Image 1: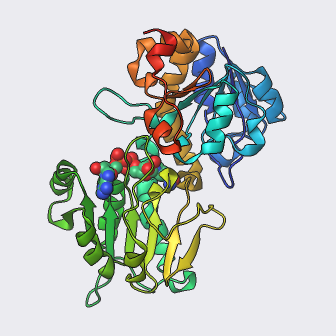
Image 2: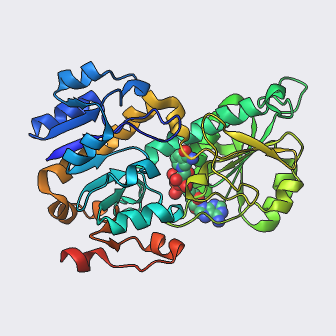
Length: 373
Ligand SMILES: NC(=O)c1ccc[n+]([C@@H]2O[C@H](COP(=O)([O-])OP(=O)(O)OC[C@H]3O[C@@H](n4cnc5c(N)ncnc54)[C@H](O)[C@@H]3O)[C@@H](O)[C@H]2O)c1
């Protein structure tokens, strides 16, 4: 098949959807790979490396979209790319459609087969293409928060780990999944006072098994969060209900009662976020704003800030799906791997992800009824 990799258009998105190593693997399977000029630069991969691996370099995205049967990306197409999408083209990328109504409608109208990395789900419920980016974002979230706590950034001037005779900064992580665990690893490593809340006690048990007495665990509920947020220096949003919009858990009143100069990093923002006072997605270039004396950070592509690590981590996981789709075609690939079926969000003008359909109030169609399996 012909596989196209455009340069990412999202602000400061320096990741790229495949590396020269994956080009070599795809070439071994007799596929053609088209890369937009400079697409890999932000992740440290030059056009020459791609060419040496067997890719063809194109000067603009138009040619890539025009010539490719599969478009592989990192983030969702931006409005400037919508008109480039073609009927029956396969789009393989992060999409987060539950909060992207205009894009969803474009994918439906243009009859694109859109496969969302974040909804590919294995039998045991794992989301293999979300995990590596959640690991990166979780680790980054504490690094970011520690920075925002500095006076020069409007923070309360608190060193997360404290020192002898001075209290440690208090970190509250909501959600004990991949983001939450990785945030906790860094926060504990920095010597902070760390708490995690989740509604799933098995997730909390896991935290207890990993961190023991270094992390306090709480069953998440409104009264519990109301008390905890009053003392928190750093709040990390790390909640996910797969395919659905994130629930609004941190109310405006809770934020009003947080300490001045405290910091909220809502990693869940790509699914709409869990904080009532976050009313916008921010960018890596202009990532935070202040409301009620609390610094809010709501970047939806945090891993884009550490593009080299993130690109390699992501492509390590995406390549086997990409080879499978390119080798077998979409229908046989789905039949051979049910986890891929969960990734199909739109197919031939129909919306095939129930969570997205509910979030956007659009009609849902079961995928098997469309492809006959
Ligand atoms: N902003 C970014 O750049 C970025 C990067 C990577 C991941 N993410 C997002 O981070 C979020 C978390 O991802 P993850 O991989 O950790 O998911 P996960 O499924 O591993 O963990 C989510 C956790 O949220 C918990 N949860 C669900 N509802 C809850 C509630 N009401 N209260 C408390 N906890 C609740 C679940 O029990 C689960 O433990 C997702 O929205 C993901 O898309 C964002």
